[in-house]
Image (spheres, rainbow, N blue to C red):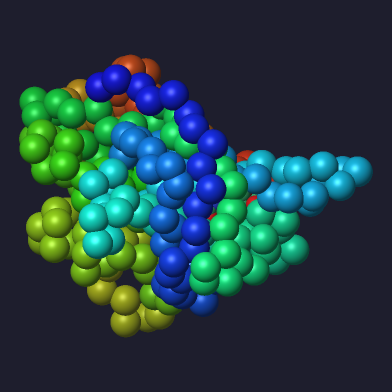
Amino acid sequence: MEKQKPLTVASRLIGKKSLTGDVVEFLFQAEPAFSFQPGQFISIVIPGAGPGGRDLRRAYSIASSPELDLDGKPVFELCVKLVEGGPGTTYLNSLNIGQSMTGMAPFGDFVFKPNPDRHALFISTGTGLAPFRSMALSRVFSENRPRSTRILFGARNEGDLLYTEELLAVLGPGSLVQALSRSQADWCGFKGRVTDWLRENAAAIDWANTEFYLCGNGAMIDEAKTILTSKGVEKTSIHQEVYYKPKPGESHAN
Ligand SMILES: Cc1cc2nc3c(=O)[nH]c(=O)nc-3n(C[C@H](O)[C@H](O)[C@H](O)COP(=O)(O)OP(=O)(O)OC[C@H]3O[C@@H](n4cnc5c(N)ncnc54)[C@H](O)[C@@H]3O)c2cc1C
């Protein structure tokens, strides 16, 4: 697929909703409209938040499909975890409906690579699910579905779950594994981290014939890659987007 040159876009906030206690979904209308591939991100300008009053930039994966529109006008969604005191998320969350922000888009090589001969396993923690939602809802995915698709989503507890019904509706039963590290006792899904699930379910994974997409916490991605490499997965079958490196001593389960 041809790569689009990034454009400067002034995006007007037209919708905002809380998905969990600390994750918010933003709906923007872009001017001018821009094309992107599912998995790509927008780089947002945070005015005056840098040293010496300079602008800062923050990256956000586009969480909606490239085809999403509202009354014929292209729109896009972001799925953002609010970080206490973080300049980027504080700025985004301070925008009121009707206000605009400036960004550049699209960026990134972490895109869905259609291949109906291969399985796809999408592994994420937290809002690392955003690019996988974009992929799962996209036309390129529905027209070129992998041999099988599974999303493995890691979070702390039931209150952190994102997009459950929507993903199950698109991908089908059994395609979404939700791994909770601090679930209630009656949680029927997987208890543990996504990397625990990979180890415990190793026999059920066709390691040689799967494309692995990893997104979110850098510690999870490092640990998952160690597991994949030990199973003989080729580097060319591992695709990754690191959102952030956790602070020293912080695990990827919290
Ligand atoms: C390519 C790319 C795409 C990204 N897409 C998204 C996205 O779709 N949604 C999203 O929420 N974030 C995303 N991020 C992270 C985002 O760019 C910011 O780093 C994040 O929003 C924090 O920015 P801040 O200025 O509020 O806080 P900062 O002061 O920059 O960050 C403070 C600390 O918050 C932690 N942190 C950062 N991001 C997260 C997160 N997502 N979950 C938990 N802890 C975090 C880190 O420990 C970081 O050091 C993406 C990052 C990259 C590189």
